[in-house]
Image (tube, rainbow, N blue to C red; front, side, top):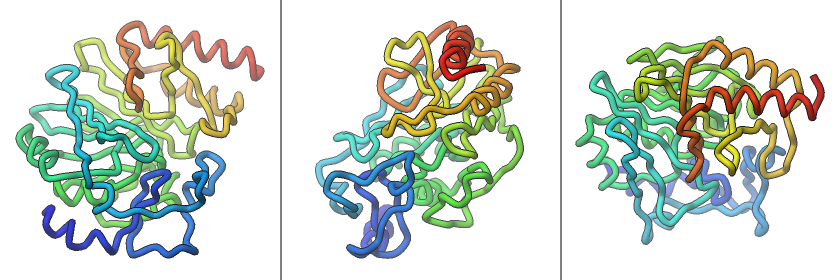
Length: 276
């Protein structure tokens, strides 16, 4: 797979700022719609396109085992937005939560040694990155919420759009639609994780630096908050879920215990500021 990927990579350019992969070569006059949107930004040097060959020089993927059923994947050195992905390990099939804009042969081999991937699920368009390449490498589908279809820059038959409030998976896991940051914003709910339950939230429920609270933003880099209606929708969607931990998209973004209470307090605090 990787040999073919390298041979074809010149025909797929990658946005250096957000890490989104595009089909076909980009030109100097092309722009990245994801970066032009007010939830992202164009870099200080304007629109810059890079290639897989450029990204691969001196770069690898670091795996960190948080528990026997959870691994974190991080490109080293970091690139683009800098998010991490989570691999949830299960005898019933592994799922990759969110995606990163890099993949190499050692990473493919290691994940295959763990059983490969049954599916990939992604919280929102900023992390679509190289999802089609990942899905091709592991011959699996990518689950995206229908409401964010317009943000798919690399169409593929491997992408499966779902709609509504919830998509059941296996091991009682489910994708839950929360909206907010993007119309199709999604979190992954794993009620059996560590026998206490966990949420994997991307940026939809953003773990704060104190790791005792969370926040909710329409745009993080441009500091645009969500309104009360969006917060109320998130509140209603997560209220039935039982969980003890939250895993966010960046290093250190873990609330290991009492996360449900932290979300409740954070929603109350947020609404007290923006109005109820």
